[in-house]
Length: 456
Image (tube, rainbow, N blue to C red; front, side, top):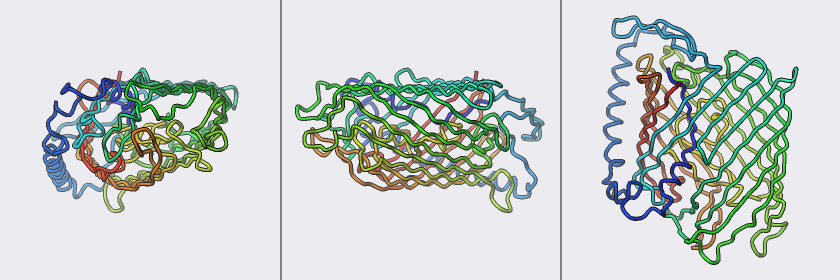
């Protein structure tokens, strides 16, 4: 069965599709899909059918297995024999230490976020775990994450690289609308090198460990105008970056056949300090305009059973938070809040998560989010989930045509999703989500997401 890669680099594909500014009735424009703001596009009509079908499937599943208290869910990587519609099905074992997959898909939004009613997605994922090394890559061309660990006899050599270098300009939102005057090209490249300590933990699967890492970081930040940039918009200088990171991660999670969290807990925190060498803040700003800043993030994710019911029933919980010390957050060092499937992959568990439509452009200098949900195994290859989330965020917003500031917002989201195995060692994720307005900066809305993940 296919590996479930929950977090991919949605923002890269989205920015590339709307690189022309979002106008003119093309495939990525509002006109191509109807009146998204008026609620007449596909995103406004599909949710009723999805919700109805999910409720029917849930009811049938509960009736079929009311007396099934000794059932055991097929778990990731393990061979197992199950019975489906009176027939025996043999599930082969999968080598989870060596996995490569691609994820492609899209979210259809109503109303649009900014000028985009559709957000495409595509990424390549690779993980290779050996006795003496660990490597992981999430590749989406302009937004990538690379991680390499080498065992040095009790200690790890840690090497990491990440970049967020989109070839199109980003714009900030106000009341769900993109403000063209805030358009700006900017990006960052960061490499890290240091030492770490790592130990396997129960249940001793390939992704279960406790790790502590301390790395030195160096990189480069750039920013420059676009044709739509307002004359008075503040543009920071290009600058080298230097700093350090302390990271602590624990993953005691057992995954099911589709790599979804089944039982256990994962937790951790990051402490980052960076110095922007030739930084100059806005006119009148003190202390070099956030030239030096420290950020702290933490997470807790858990999954468990429902007392008195079989393993087909799972409860899900997540808690995320982050802040920038002394309020030294700005548009260019803000956290990125991610909306998407409930996290599952080892590194994905640590990224800021808020249930809702896929969208990776919510910038915040401080945030806290909590999610709770229920998942039902309809059959061994099909899972129905419902999830509710709450978020508080000190998020970026366009104050005027040429100024970006931060404003405290809070809101809620709800998601109904189906995860299913599919042909050719692949899996599908189909979800409907509603969000109260934090993601669109003041405008509530819903959307439908479909993703396909193929394991090689």
